[in-house]
Length: 154
Image 1 (cartoon, helix red, strand yellow):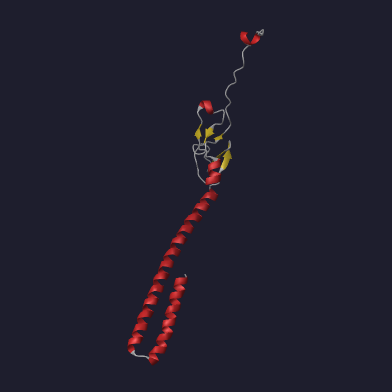
Image 2: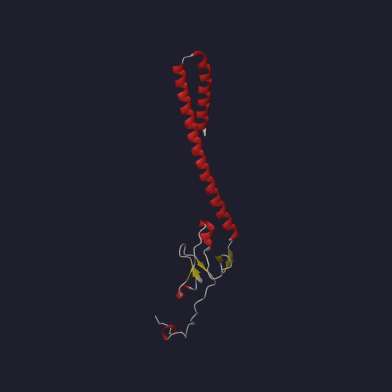
């Protein structure tokens, strides 16, 4: 931006000099200053074009980010069994930790049967467990063994 301002200031300076020179000097110096003015204005015009292009890119990026933000606000997650689900689809559960910290929708997978005591689902990214745990059936201890019932004599 300062380059443009400097270029325009230079062009205005040269214009002022051209007015003064037109009255005093010969045609050769006038043409030299006119060429300098043309170059300075051309540079300023190129810089304005570059800034317009950058502005258009930034506006497009801003619109894209606004659309993502609106989508995210409209698709707010609901929670079930400690995991998120989106848009009323209760069949697909997502990791709350990954979504809350990294804004990633990581689909949970079902834990293997022997690990379901930790939770119904597991996050493949952060390994967090979710869902109501299905406890393993507890095997009651049988009667004390013969070894445990005998007292050892010393």
